[in-house]
Amino acid sequence: MAAFSYESIDFGELESGQIANRFVILYNLHQTQKLKFDFQKSGLMCGDNLKLEPMTGELEPNSH
Figure 1 (cartoon, rainbow, N blue to C red):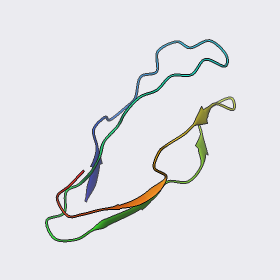
Figure 2 (cartoon, rainbow, N blue to C red; figure 1 turned 90 degrees about the vertical axis):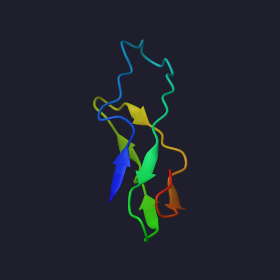
Figure 3 (cartoon, rainbow, N blue to C red; figure 1 turned 30 degrees about the vertical axis):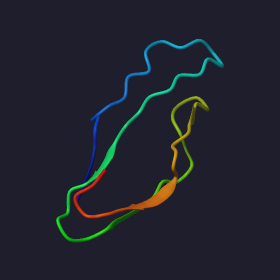
């Protein structure tokens, strides 16, 4: 039972090599169980690089 603060993330139009930062919040909606997460290295299209921090972790019940 997890959710992100955004359904989609809009980076707008970027020049090649331009860096843009966005924040999303991961929510653990479960009332009693911890949420362990492990994001895999991912890319978007055409070799774009998406960096998530932290890549792994654990959320207490009903936290973000």
